[in-house]
Image (cartoon, rainbow over all chains, first blue to last red; front, side, top):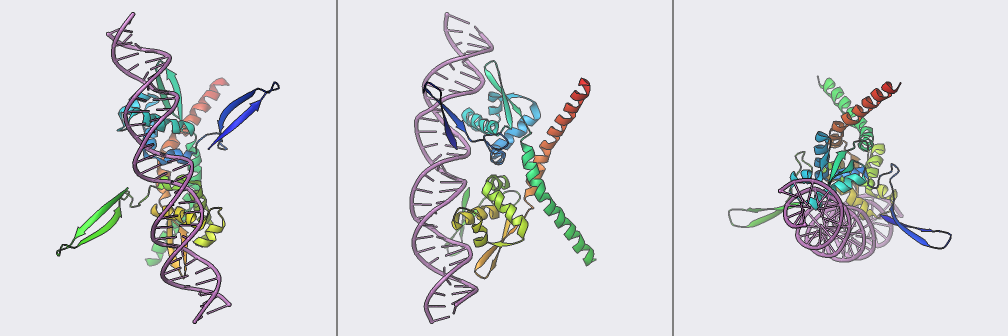
Amino acid sequence: MVIVIIISDITGNINEKVGVILTEKGQVRDVYDAVADPTRRKLLRMLADVEELPLHEITVHFQMGRTAVSKHLAILKEADLVITRKVGRETRYRLNVAPLQEIQDWVSFYEGFWKQRIVKLNLLLEEKQ
Amino acid sequence: MVIVIIISDITGNINEKVGVILTEKGQVRDVYDAVADPTRRKLLRMLADVEELPLHEITVHFQMGRTAVSKHLAILKEADLVITRKVGRETRYRLNVAPLQEIQDWVSFYEGFWKQRIVKLNLLLEEKQ
DNA sequence: TTTACAAGACACCTTTTGGTGTCCTATAAT
DNA sequence: ATTATAGGACACCAAAAGGTGTCTTGTAAA
């Protein structure tokens, strides 16, 4: 979903800037969406172990090519789940867990439901005895 | 991801049956995938409030047509997040939260990371004082 | 016993997704 | 100074996603 912002100055010159619609949270990409793909979840899991990793090292652990892995990381970055840093000729990737809190908040709403179910089940078992 | 199972009986007649590859948990569809779409999350939220709802009543609350809503519900059903029951000419949908536990387990692994960050932040603030 | 309604089953369309390969530039190693 | 490597930027492709509309069947209401 891409919008084009056109800014004109006093002289009438036009500056064209390509922007994107942002989430309320400020990310370009929905965090649920970013996490839906198993490859992306594997990437997060990898980065959870190692503090920082360059693209080519990450790529080794996947069957697909570098371009594909890079794209997945780009999506994670759009969701703010990953932070990049240029070191020499390599780009190092680092995990940023903060946006996952949104998912946890969301799922914790439903948590009440299955806890309720366990209570009901226990009551039923007591009746049987 | 669809596989075709071909079963041949003694007479040589061939029965063709279309099956699907299942998750370890037994669902046809990944729960992360099912939950990635905002429309589907809205559906779950609706069903959390009302115990049971027929398709046509659900459809009223969306801008898209019945077919589209039905498709989304089918996807939720594939992920076992929804259970259906036929009553007269209507199909009633009911929420099943159980599969969401997988997501909670997954996210709770990363929960440790941001809690850790808060601890580090507090230590930093204490030093400053 | 007609008529209206609920919803399954398709066929169809456009956009997005997840992958590929190639080219090019900046940096590091020889 | 030359060669190798890291990775960004494309162009390209097949399949899946997310919608539409239409037809048909089973059930309910008039």
